[in-house]
Length: 342
Ligand code: DGY
View (tube, rainbow, N blue to C red):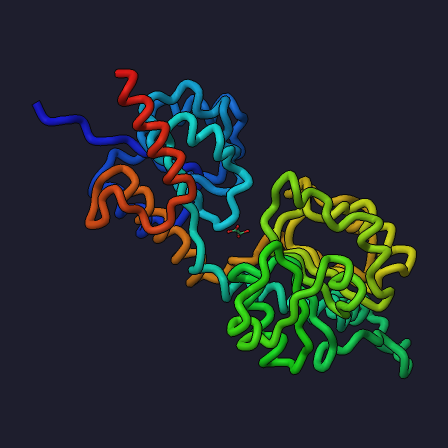
């Protein structure tokens, strides 16, 4: 008798024509409507499948995989993977994958757009005009901060950080300074025109500081009241990484007291909820986690996640060699140990 086909779960409606590629290999249970899942519902779905394609909205932790003996792969449709408990997945022998590279430039574009919008007060200007207040114009209406020729600070110099550095240095003649756990090689620094500084130096020197570092226990609230107090009062802070990197209460206080000039935020600690204190402020531009949201890039992300899932479940031209695994080494160890016990 033929082996039953592997089953996969697709947690949210994505692009049907791309997700349909899974059907050549698997029985697919794809959500037809946007769904908010309780943890027990995620566990129930995973219990029945060999693989899953999930978004940042689904938290996949030890509880989610505990009752899922068939589960072998979880493909995240995002580069960030703080929704996945990698230790739990690795211990369960579940390979996790993500979608790096394809979203780098689109997210760097958005980071730069937020920087410009915050520094040049675009959101506030637009609201003012729509409110019919142009008649109150004066020569000092909506004065903002220059971008060209200023100092661009970047915290976290991965792919997206480098994309933002390139835009600043080559497009706007900015001096680029950055902080990262490891320094970039000299030739990469030279190409980007970027100089490494320690964290304090970055805070004090940046006219515009963009956060692009991964979220972890170590980076939780790394930009807190003390860090904000080290920044120039004329500075702009932009976050396109993860909300939990910034102490939002401290940021709201710094923005409302004039301790910090402006901010642009695409990510929030409790998203989709946004702190009322931030919503009430004029000098912060707020967007709903749209860093990678161009049509071409979102399609490329889904396509890469589909490729990852097909390969991770041992099918397709790259069987067992998915393009972007996250925890491959740990999973190999778990699977070897499990085989030994059998
Ligand atoms: C990512 O891929 O991590 C982005 O934040 C999602 O848009």
